[in-house]
Image 1 (cartoon, rainbow, N blue to C red):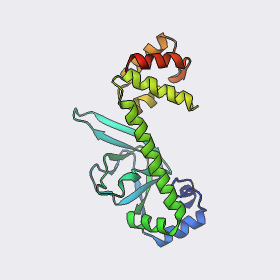
Image 2: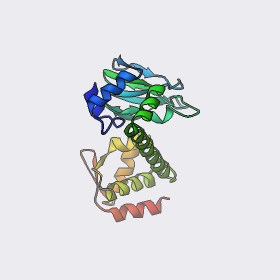
Image 3: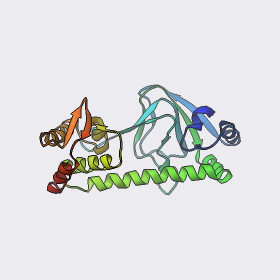
Image 4: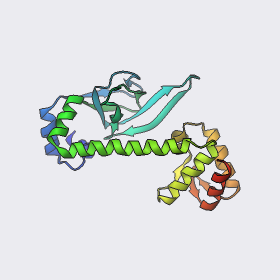
Length: 220
């Protein structure tokens, strides 16, 4: 367990021996879940930070139309909803469901607070995690401020190109914008017709950024 936690963003920069020493001082538990089991239900109090030690989990919720909305997968050794652990409203906004057989480390809030007081590296790591998530949310809200899905996807692909990210794929867009695959495919088909992008085995490669910018300006 200490080896996998060494790779966790919360314990980044710490030796596994030091991680083991910290865990021996504070309250935690490890719980196993089978594929398909609900690890935590929406609106339940979130009093222990959950860290995925093995397997994959995903957040799920149901919208007003009865459609299940799924968030991105969370793989070991990442944290589950750390921003909801502290503050006035510490309840999970989604159901957390195991996508495979899963092991979860439950680190009580008081234990995490004690670790952060004892080791500034953990405090710094936790602040970095929250900051990165806040930045991601800000970018997502920026994309969603546009009127059309076409402009949202155009802006997304332009930024991915300038930031030198790996080519995205159709499923990435479906997950990110929480829309149907058919909606994404229709937009990408329009982009392909004007040679702004190429789609190769669902991978999206931007071939003309200027054409995407033109699409973005025309669809605001």
